[in-house]
Image 1: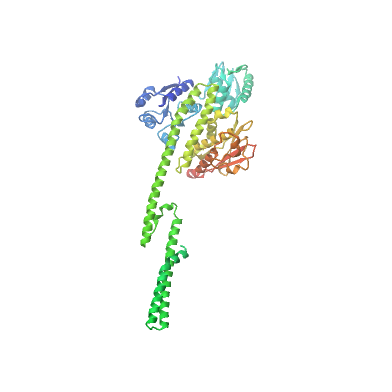
Image 2: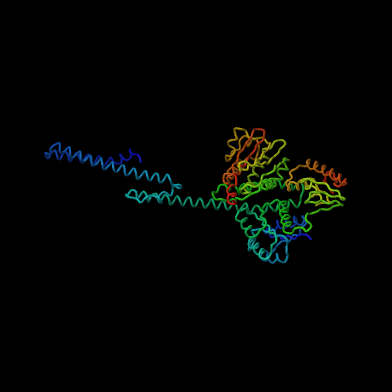
Length: 223
Length: 338
């Protein structure tokens, strides 16, 4: 079941685009439309996480935050255009879990959301495992496993494989992969990506996974 | 108090006394008083006058010098009329009233200028706040429709963001009040956030970015430092060389942490180096590269001064530039924790 995220944002363009972004990242995204009844909508939607703007018509984000906190412990992410320190202090005092200022980097927003969800709802089996075509990518151990044989991956190789596994079956344009890597603090260019992929292919061949990563000429990579 | 001016002021009284003494002496001589007695009377007259003037000089000098010292010791000298001792003569009293009037109109002018400035700063802050909403919407739109075109757009959006932030921090740097929040900040997080903030700009110009291992935390305002780093990154891209590279490194020494941002761009000529922090100074590089405002480093310096961060620029022409930010040790935090 995907996590449900409630968007409380008064700008319609941002609201719509956030919904697309979050749905694309595999979440179920709902948005508050009637700000007078935001607290009721929160109760009926029962989200796993709330994205909350501070400046809202009606009561405002802080007021809503304390009303949510009175009934629930869900992670609350404050998203605001103001970079005033008072707002940040207030958001911490009222029990907000994160404070992100506009204009935020969408990738960073997604990373914060994922981290908060992981912390609030820890997975039972200890460590995420991604699977595709019989291969299993162990994120915590930084290993790839195929038919009982394992290969250790470096931090950077894990990041590349993580992206490919997440988009398994689809063609991943090289530029998108580089985008993702930059968002994850690996600053490489197109050539370096080729080098990294070549090294990953060697490791994969070592555990019997030949031709696991396919190159689509002029398009990108695919699993 | 100047002695010459004092004596000049006493001249009429002295002349009057001299005339009086002369007239009296002539009258006494005419009445048949012995010349010796007349001389004695005139001598006593002169001595009394001299004594009186001398005492007056000493007392007045002492009082006026004390007033000058009082004014010297005052931080806001326009408030002087408030702390003066009570007037003792009619002139002093009028003088005091004149000063009070001047002070009042001065305070009114200062007050209204301050109010206007604060209002303008608030307007700038609000404007920046407002403009962030459409920027965010555009960023999300681009992110949801990835294509070469939207990447170009995102690079331009980064520029818009940098310019609006510059307006915000410029307004803040001009203001005396504190707008920052000092706390323990992870240096690595700030550096990565700054790189992320210029991601598309750096990729557009194929800058090779290296972030070395960062030692722990420093006590500062992360958002301000992120803005400063953003300006430095923009400079590195603006004055880049043929194969641009940007390196972030940090080192801890004697409790202080030095963060160095190093590029391999065109560098700064030695003649321009001492003036890079001046407002509006663009130098030789500014003439060679379009888009120099002479504002970036000036603002960095001002913000660093406010935050208590040391900032240094080292460069050799043609061999790149390196800017170092020195964060003082966080002794007081350690002290509180015991």
